[in-house]
Length: 167
Ligand SMILES: C[S@@+](CC[C@H](N)C(=O)[O-])C[C@H]1O[C@@H](n2cnc3c(N)ncnc32)[C@H](O)[C@@H]1O
Image (cartoon, rainbow, N blue to C red):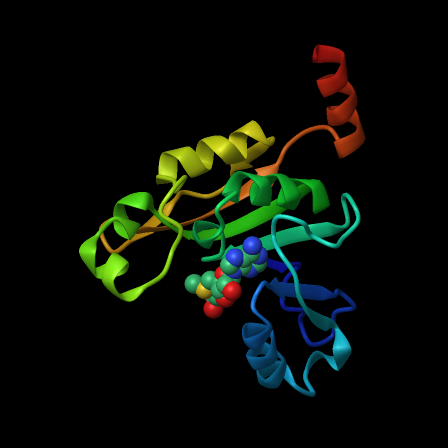
């Protein structure tokens, strides 16, 4: 996942990128070396346990991560936790139908259980208070879907209070 966005040259914004695989982080570090004045931070970590404070990011980018994560719903909950109210998730994901194809199974490694369709992914986002804020773009006959969703309404604390009140 990438949280934040690539900062514009004169921006003071920070971006943080994480991946579970230290090699991926090493490659990314080489690619951005000496750019952005240290405003991009890269770290090894899991989307299911983000090492960031609640409500600390304006945007999160899930670029083909969650379909690799057995507990992908926990990943969405974590993204929701670290986003500020009104924050956006930008996602590009792969469907279960695609992962079930011979070619994916033969050449790529993915968890087999608890994968998702586009509809299941969007429903999970909705369950966490996100609302789609762009039409979904589909590529490769719908194997890959790309979209943006915005975190609605109350801040995290308000939502937690209402969850407690309703439990
Ligand atoms: C298809 S690659 C996408 C890599 C990168 N986002 C890109 O667009 O090039 C999937 C990545 O998910 C990472 N990954 C798998 N489980 C993860 C987790 N729980 N937290 C963070 N990254 C994870 C893998 O290490 C792998 O680099």
